[in-house]
Image (cartoon, rainbow, N blue to C red):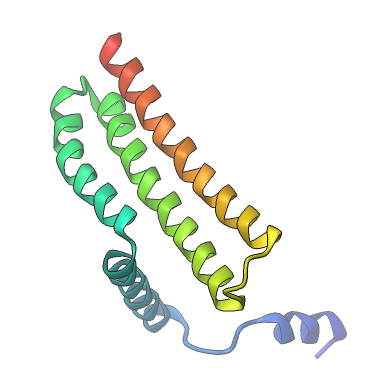
Length: 130
C-alpha cells in the first residue's frame, strides 16, 4: 500500500458501513430530536408552530414552489434551533462559568435562530402578498 492510500485509510472513521451505518445514523438523529423536545422549550414551541403553520402553508401556497417555500422556511427554523441547542450544550459542557466567548457563542446561535425566524416572515409575507 502506498503512502497516500495509508493516509486516506488513517483518516477514515472506523465503524459500520452501508445500511447499518444509515440505520445507526437515523437512530442517533431520532435521539437528538427526542432530546431537543425534552430539554429545549424553544424547540417545542417552534415544532408546535410548524405543525400548525405547515398545513396552512400547503393550503395557501399556489403551486409547488410556493408551498415548498412556505414549508421549508419553517423547517429551516427547526434545523437552526437544533444547531443552536447543540452549541449551547457544548458550551455548557465545557464550563458553567461566565465567559465572554461562551456568551458570544450562545448569542450568535440565538441570532441565527432570529435570522431564520425573520426568513419565515419575509418568505410568508412575499408569497402571500403577491
